[in-house]
Every structure is written in C-alpha cells, then in structure tokens.
Length: 173
Image 1 (cartoon, rainbow, N blue to C red):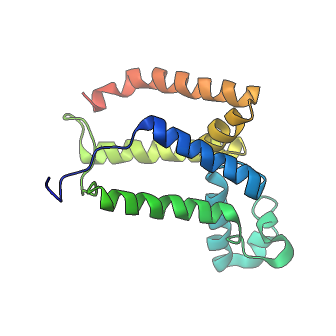
Image 2 (cartoon, rainbow, N blue to C red):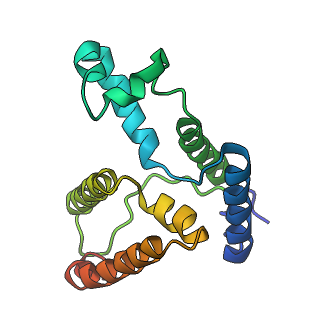
C-alpha cells in the first residue's frame, strides 16, 4: 500500500454515531449543544475591541461579550471551533488528503468559484447571526431536542439548496 495514497473516508454511519456521542457529551458537560457562529462573533468582538475597546464594549450587540471583564474568547465555543479546525487538519494530514487546489467544475473559473464561495459564506454568516444561531446549532442541537422550528429550518435549508442548485449547477458540470 502506498504510504502517500489518500486513505478512504470514514463510514458516514460511524461518523454520525460519533457526532451524536459528542453532542450528548456537550449537553452533559457544558449544558448546551454544539454550534459555531457564536465563536466567530466572539472573535469579531475581540478583534474589534483591539482597535476601539470602549466603543465595542458599549455596543449593544457586541458589548455583552465583555460583561464580567472576561475576554470574549474565554468561552467553550471558541475552543470547540479551534478543536474542529485542528482536528480536521490532523485528520486530513494522516489520511494524506491535504492538497492545494480549488474544487470546481470544468467550466468554472478559479475567480468565479472563490467569488461564489465568498458570497455564499457571507450570506450564511449574516443569516446565522440574524437568526441567532448557525445551521450546525439548529440541525444538530435543535434537531436532537426535537425542536419543531429546527426541523422546519433544516427542511427549508435543503429546499433552498435544491432551488439554488438549478441556478448554480453550471459551475459544476
């Protein structure tokens, strides 16, 4: 077996089971589910405060992350997101899956693919903050709690993705 050959992907069933155990552990240990957008908001508050601390600390939206005098980064969600990034990097390294390329369809340009990714990420990030949570928090945590709103949200995400695919499929074929 070639040592540098990419390793096969994990079983989606085993990965889903493992993710369920992580979610259960998060509820037992931290008293809340998983999510990612809160960590990004905390990072934004921290970086903004480096430039204009008083203005950010008195801001009605970002100021709440400075209550009690602790750093906005002193939250378990920040460490969760860092752990996901570092864990993904370690996993990809051991599986020999780190390559430098832009995934795109044969007719798409690099600039077009990156522009679509940036616009899509900005829309998703804005929507996550507008709805006070990200898709991972809604789908994993809300879905696990059998929240009707979370299930409606996820069905809407899939329906929206299916609808948008008609307009964007030329980027992949």
